Amino acid sequence: MAQRSSSARALLLLLSGLLMVASVKADTLLSAPLNVTIRDLEGNSAVVTWEILDGDPVIGFSVTQQKRDVRMLRLIQEVNTTTRSCVLWDLDEDTEYIVHVQSLSAEGSSPPSEALVFRTPRESEKMASKSPDENGMEGYDQTAQLRAGELIIIVVVLVMWAGVIVLFCRQYDIIKDNEPNNNKDKAKNSSECSTPEHPQGGLLRSNV
Image (cartoon, rainbow, N blue to C red):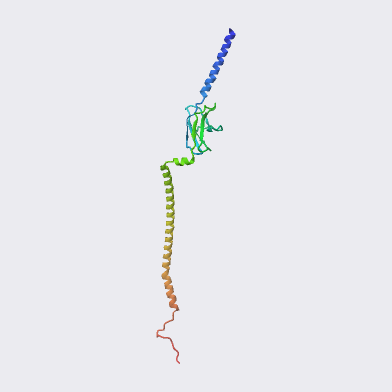
């Protein structure tokens, strides 16, 4: 009887220890990320975002990316970060992808989030999906840039012409100021070179 009671106590101690370990693991187990969504979807890239429960000791994340109906996976893992988003790059256009997100802690990882399925668009489809207002705004911006460039060119040309006119006016004033002095010098030179006049009139004649 004593042996049976001692074995029963040992079994109870073992069970209590297992329950304690299970409770500790349950306390440290992370919750799966919530509200996993895709934004900034392009033909070759996308951004996946998620949320976590308050109080979870998260130190990083792990993202698995897989093409639909293809077994090959891409694993993106980051630690020592509080980021709640991840860029998916080098995607193929018009292709479906499946994404799972897991939270990481010092004790391990959380269960994977619910599968997020999305399809990348074609570039032609993305351009066509833009609203007319957006296309109009882009055209308006380009027109405004062209007009601004034309105005700059016109202003530069006008400034250059104004400089040329001012320079011409200065040169003209200098030439005009020098003209009376030139006329006086010409008159003086002509008077010195002309034949002198005699008071009695006529030229001297020799007697024959």
